Length: 457
Image (cartoon, rainbow, N blue to C red; front, side):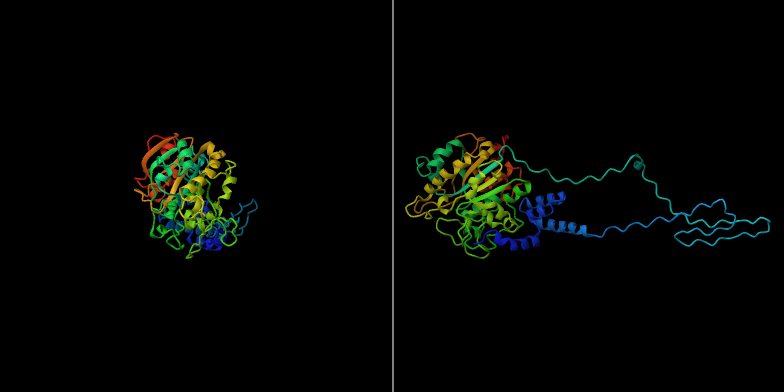
């Protein structure tokens, strides 16, 4: 497995070769027009980013054109003849040959003097436009960038992603013992989405959809045991992390157990190398729980290496509002996420393990200055792993819970929500463009209600 720092030489070459997406926008940040164009092209995960980058590359090359050649000097005017000009004078010096002087015949007693030929007059300058007499011409209008997105009344989002053992195990009546903290302590404080469903049982595609709006693929459905092109998205593909950076917001992904596979020391942005098989210890960290490691837009220029960190950083960042990111994505390890068979023998596993982890981590979030001021906590299930031998009528239905001071306590919502809904809601809270499937006409959003607006989808 590879960490962020070892990918930078390769990343720099890849970034220089493509010059597309959000990172190209950062390279031409001095040009407001260029930045606006790149943001517009990359904001919706479309292919227009590459032609736009090419156009801007030509624009940058134009800055190397030679400076304009100075205009030629004006011709020197001939001096006016003085009072002693009683004889033919010399020809005046001009920038081109002057005609020879001509003397008239001298029958008269007094000599007749013929002055030197006057130089050819330079063309008179064209008269200035009438408006110039009133003052200097007004400067051309300066192109302006589109207004920077602004967050609404919710300015800190905390998204916790677990693996579901089934809706009944989390929120079902009479089964509160499976997740007593989630169902008994948190649920009365917030909004329960009773019809929230995962897109698929696999963890990787749900996480990818929640940060990019991209649908599951054959490769991600298999949890990407080998990191190849099917599990790595091109640099032109944007995520909410890219959007937040361009808009001036902050983000971090907090991953439990993420460490250097050789030394065991905590390390940022750990993922398998291209074509390598991921080796995971039972109950440990896995890139399948970390969707940010699947995007070249974050891997190639350092976004993942900077923002994708071990969960030990969460406690430090929560101490002050200034250090708390605008958007936090939080994932436990395979055991604490709720994946069956991943915990040590005799220890709680599945829903019980996930609930114990929530009871330890969530109170720190709820007590943090950022959450108390303007925060939103989302507890969701980015995958389904029900216990063996327990058939479930609707296995993808997991439910989700939102907690905030802007939400009515103990409320429920029976509309259909998916990971696309979570992405769209977060994007609307920060005034961002909608990525890929998050912009679909049938995708339900909680954005308007959380922003205090009437209506909604």
